Figure (cartoon, rainbow, N blue to C red):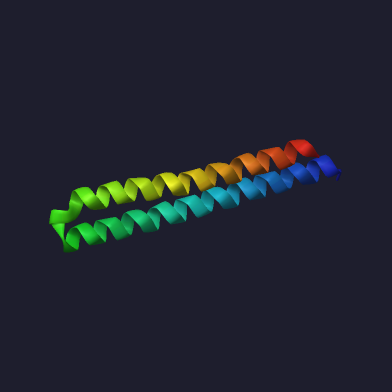
Length: 76
Protein backbone atom coordinates (compact mmCIF):
# COMPACT_ATOMS: atom_id res chain seq x y z
CA UNK A 1 0.00 0.00 0.00
CA UNK A 2 1.15 3.49 -0.72
CA UNK A 3 1.24 6.48 1.58
CA UNK A 4 -1.83 7.89 -0.17
CA UNK A 5 -3.81 4.74 0.58
CA UNK A 6 -2.78 4.86 4.23
CA UNK A 7 -3.75 8.53 4.47
CA UNK A 8 -7.22 7.80 3.06
CA UNK A 9 -7.61 4.86 5.42
CA UNK A 10 -6.60 6.90 8.46
CA UNK A 11 -8.89 9.75 7.38
CA UNK A 12 -11.78 7.30 7.21
CA UNK A 13 -11.01 5.97 10.68
CA UNK A 14 -10.66 9.50 12.07
CA UNK A 15 -13.94 10.61 10.54
CA UNK A 16 -15.69 7.52 11.85
CA UNK A 17 -14.36 7.98 15.36
CA UNK A 18 -15.37 11.63 15.45
CA UNK A 19 -18.90 10.80 14.29
CA UNK A 20 -19.20 8.03 16.88
CA UNK A 21 -18.05 10.43 19.59
CA UNK A 22 -20.56 13.08 18.53
CA UNK A 23 -23.37 10.52 18.49
CA UNK A 24 -22.53 9.30 21.98
CA UNK A 25 -22.21 12.86 23.30
CA UNK A 26 -25.52 14.07 21.91
CA UNK A 27 -27.27 10.90 23.04
CA UNK A 28 -26.07 11.34 26.60
CA UNK A 29 -26.96 15.02 26.48
CA UNK A 30 -30.52 14.33 25.34
CA UNK A 31 -30.98 11.56 27.90
CA UNK A 32 -29.85 13.83 30.71
CA UNK A 33 -32.08 16.67 29.54
CA UNK A 34 -35.11 14.40 29.32
CA UNK A 35 -34.37 13.01 32.78
CA UNK A 36 -34.11 16.51 34.22
CA UNK A 37 -37.34 17.55 32.50
CA UNK A 38 -39.08 14.53 33.98
CA UNK A 39 -37.89 15.45 37.46
CA UNK A 40 -38.76 19.14 37.21
CA UNK A 41 -41.14 19.98 34.32
CA UNK A 42 -41.27 23.69 35.16
CA UNK A 43 -37.66 24.23 34.04
CA UNK A 44 -38.14 22.90 30.52
CA UNK A 45 -37.33 26.19 28.75
CA UNK A 46 -34.04 26.67 30.59
CA UNK A 47 -33.03 23.06 30.00
CA UNK A 48 -33.86 23.30 26.30
CA UNK A 49 -31.69 26.40 25.87
CA UNK A 50 -28.78 24.83 27.72
CA UNK A 51 -29.16 21.58 25.78
CA UNK A 52 -29.14 23.34 22.40
CA UNK A 53 -26.00 25.30 23.27
CA UNK A 54 -24.21 22.15 24.42
CA UNK A 55 -25.36 20.22 21.33
CA UNK A 56 -24.02 22.98 19.08
CA UNK A 57 -20.65 22.82 20.83
CA UNK A 58 -20.53 19.03 20.45
CA UNK A 59 -21.41 19.31 16.76
CA UNK A 60 -18.68 21.91 16.32
CA UNK A 61 -16.07 19.59 17.77
CA UNK A 62 -17.31 16.77 15.52
CA UNK A 63 -17.13 19.00 12.47
CA UNK A 64 -13.60 20.02 13.44
CA UNK A 65 -12.64 16.33 13.62
CA UNK A 66 -14.10 15.64 10.17
CA UNK A 67 -12.37 18.63 8.59
CA UNK A 68 -9.09 17.68 10.22
CA UNK A 69 -9.39 14.14 8.83
CA UNK A 70 -10.06 15.44 5.33
CA UNK A 71 -7.14 17.88 5.52
CA UNK A 72 -4.76 15.18 6.68
CA UNK A 73 -5.89 12.89 3.85
CA UNK A 74 -5.29 15.53 1.19
CA UNK A 75 -1.83 16.50 2.52
CA UNK A 76 -0.30 13.08 1.78
